[in-house]
Image (cartoon, rainbow, N blue to C red; front, side):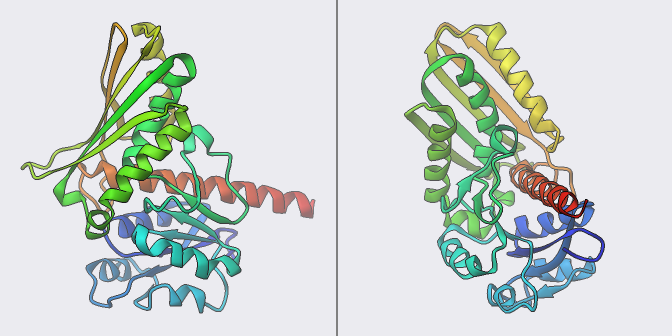
Length: 297
């Protein structure tokens, strides 16, 4: 914790996600962006972070391991293939590692579903952008109805999908499917990711198809509206674009626009996972500060 009572944070990764995440941390009253880390000093993201007045390092994970004081929170915005190594190296430092890669290494967290289930330290996983957009809706529907099949189709603009995400396409699909099963209890799940080359770029969209029993337009729409409002509490650009129920099928589509910090409005895929990560970190900070206050009172 720094002198202003905010938790010290580091952003590991200076790509599309990392720079927007650092910008969001800068706005937080509970978090302090103490370092943005990359591996190449010529990376545009590191230059952007430095222009914002943020400390930067091109030494990769070593800059975190060798820091004089451990960071309270580290956001890993690199890729799933290297996250396991990062988690192993940071474990002795007793930091909270918030994983924005689809690695499936840590505990999966979706803020509006299990956002109070944050460990004191260790590794938590933010699933994927498609998971963060779909799981609150799917969880709400499956709590009220028997569902036998779920399909999640995510469409993201090509310009919003960075190199690390492209390296993790299989992990993205596998992690999204695993998370949907975990949070809904539905075994038969299929996830599909479309990277759209369209111009102008397509707004981030997630379409969900559910097949089950006892589905009614009234109950499904109520569940969807409540879940969407919960997500909008931290991701204002989250909107329900369609909600159709017919016979034993329900079709729900959501679109997410970004707040436009360091990313364009169509890149809602980046905005929703970063906003979810910030929400988790701020809840962690609030719980820690409350605990500290209780110990000194």
